[in-house]
Image 1 (cartoon, helix red, strand yellow):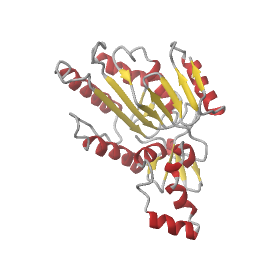
Image 2: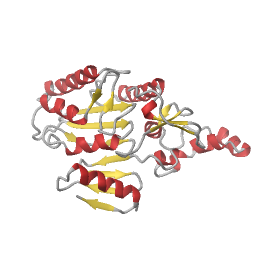
Image 3: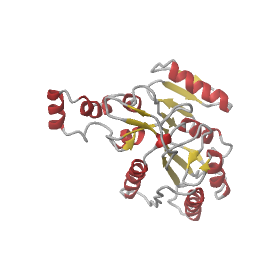
Image 4: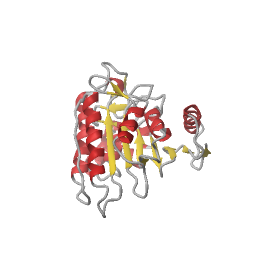
Length: 279
């Protein structure tokens, strides 16, 4: 969860933002704790979660292995639909698509291989994998999971999110105490905004508060908060990657990694609400 020291600092209307290659540990822990509370509050189904703060590579692998083992143990239950693993990571990622842990990096390939090694081939009840990656270059990580041979065989990648394209930094804001992606996922709509304080901010010309209060009205709030330098990606229905408010890339015919990343770049660089690239 903790990236390298330093990071790039930029002034913005929403306050100072920092690239997550220098992520503050308390910010990424706040991201992790939000999701832990979210999963803990889900009483609609059997839920087990593990909260890891600044973990080692072996701790993350062990947690994934334990989760898959738990699902495998219950796979014969009549009400079991295959189960789902929700993997959330906040911190720094590398250009190679690895997530940076306290002692080493962990690749998307390793994550997929661990799941495949400890699970079963998909039949009627497919194990589902959902990831939220609030880290630099996370579009590469998501792309690798999507193109991994085990996707659709040992697990089905669903409802997943990457904070930034494969060539982009992810950013966090000190005023938010979160990464931009997880802040916008946590604060959908404007219910979190004190309307009286917003009115006072308008009267006083408090651009910083106004900027934060209005982020949820933007169709691409991550890009809004980072002044156009970070573009989040959402995986839809297991094969479509939507660059938020720029267009969608459908992966129907098993594209190569280079083809997929180029299409994602083109979607960002030449946006259109109805833009669709089919690979």
